[in-house]
Length: 179
Image (cartoon, rainbow, N blue to C red; front, side, top):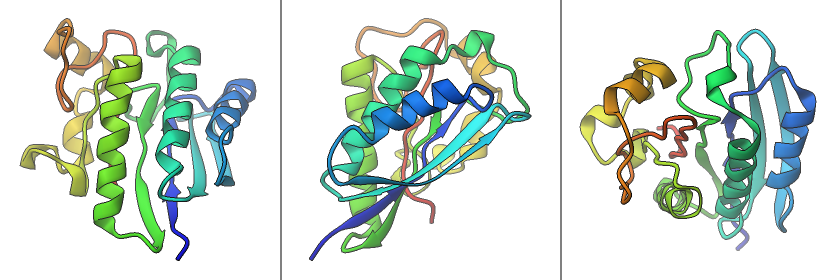
């Protein structure tokens, strides 16, 4: 049976189409991943990309997008109405066919671990993938947004676990599927 997972990453860029297109190009650079939709909102300075892919490929696609967003988006220069924590703000995984919510949680955990290993970007897992009850609700995590969280936690340690401390310039929260 073929597997299908939807991924809806949100990036903190909604005004520069070239940046969003470069992120989409990175997301789609591997096999078995397809673009369904892209929305850019200039007021919120946010884009929402909808992808589908196989269980085996969607996590790597998300990681390519996270890496490209890290390269192109600096939150120190970002303005917009939407609360955000990172250049990549959220990366939910939603089961569509041949996968379970628990499979999506495992994908989210893999993406979170690899985001730290490859990019040294700490992450916050929420909803079904949350490792702490107080992190289940996304609004609780976003309280204070990028600037408040950065000031609250200070410098990042050399070995940063998931759900630990954010980077001073760019934070990412690649988590799970909604309930």
